[in-house]
Length: 322
Ligand code: CIZ
Ligand code: SF4
Image (cartoon, rainbow, N blue to C red; front, side):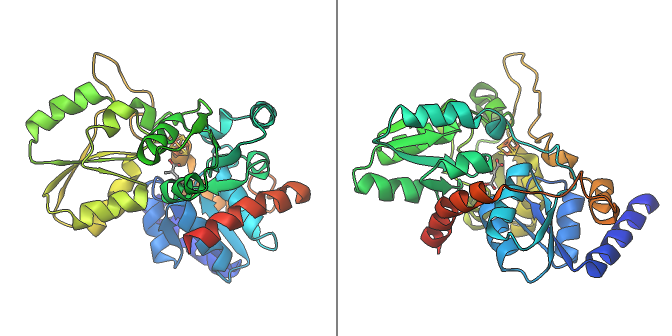
């Protein structure tokens, strides 16, 4: 409508005036992803967001995603101003892995290599030997396992179990989960499969093992988009945040994309396949992050000492991913 158009027009002008670029995650709302595309920004997973933000010449990055993505951007680009539409946008994995407890867990197993998911605070990253995203986790754990390293994995227990199973690596697991993926239900998925027997099932490995077990393809957001594009099937049942449908449909035009069920057994969903924190990145919030003269509610800062420590495992990942 016209109010949205007005916000979009203002954001476009502000991005130019402030030498800023919009970096959006696949799980943000379609109109935010479209705006990032239209303005020369990027839409991607957290690994690619980090790379794009670091390498882009803009002075300011607007990170439409959740807090750990803003922090990662700041760690990689301390000279840039990092703004977020709202600093309230966090992640259940980050919340469920407080540094004091996690650090004590690591201290109790000093002979283990600490591998943490990107969905963590700067402090947790600073305590880690490796940071990984879901698009590169399997390769990095394989690499460590081939050197006979014992691994501490945090915080996503589903992703950790999946990787341990695939690689055979010995992994001590932190018990966190993503409130969105944890809600996918295998029983309801079986019922849905009966209605669409020819559909391929695409699953993000933050989902429960029973759902992963039903997958025709398991992978990170980028890998699932690729799967929808390259697999022969006409219909896909997709178990990840529904924000992904915007890019997946672009990549696989004409194919039929169906949301995997989050209910089943009479249970109702809480997040219903859309991350409530990702959803906070609306047009109004983006406009505010650029136009507010007081940036207190938007700007990301990371303590210098933490930043330098967290940069080490993050750089390790980016170099490995090259
Ligand atoms: O679930 C998330 O937040 C994901 C998939 C992040 C990422 O790595 O892009
Ligand atoms: Fe965190 Fe899950 Fe939201 Fe991703 S989708 S930001 S893992 S709560």
